[in-house]
Image 1 (cartoon, chains in turn purple, red):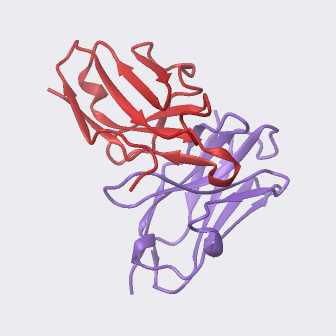
Image 2 (cartoon, one colour):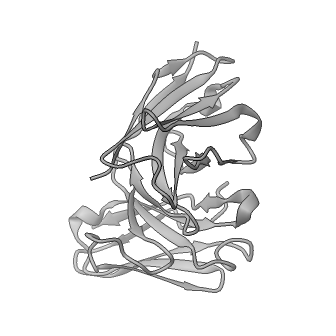
Length: 120
Length: 111
């Protein structure tokens, strides 16, 4: 059974960089036809795709976050990571990692999510 | 403001059927049969219920069904059960620039 687990600091100061890692177990991140994505959910609000990456390194970033986001993959560790720079309180959210199917664009496996709070 | 429009809340009694609408545009729901639906219980990660408009993943109850007409997709839950009380989100592919868009979510209350 595929499992995804987010890890990283739960508190980040304003203007600093948010860094999270998603570890994939029970399957290979090198699987063809799957992208690996980051989705966030501000408290009490809806879902927002941040971006996605293929094991080869091909990426997609949300146009609204593109200038601040970098997603990378480490196939040797079966992990992919998110960096979001210059964070503000508006970036406070639960961050999920998820797998989505290429060309079908649905998210079939999700991590449990991790709350990241931006505060001094 | 979310890209896809969902009602903020719906309610129904046990055993009844309810439908949640998801209205998009000609750039997303209206152009692609790539609508998915997710169920989210409080404090939990979203769970995939429906993909490609009307397909159910293995293990999802057949009480959940999806459909689409024009720019509007719908999720129907039949035989409502207390455990169905949750938030529901729709999602649609929206082209190579925007990628995917989500609805704002609908809170389902089982009376």
